Image 1 (cartoon, rainbow, N blue to C red):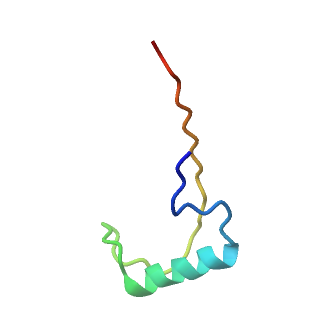
Image 2 (image 1 turned 180 degrees about the vertical axis):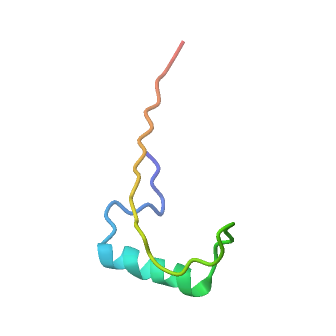
Length: 54
């Protein structure tokens, strides 16, 4: 399994800090305008299983 650069556990404080940076730098262009506050965050995990088929 190749997991280069993937973190298994992200602390809540790090997520909140990153969200603050995203809002401060206004990096997302949205139809609704500028992001002004945090609403929610979630971590989605994906697992890939390869099968040998013949």
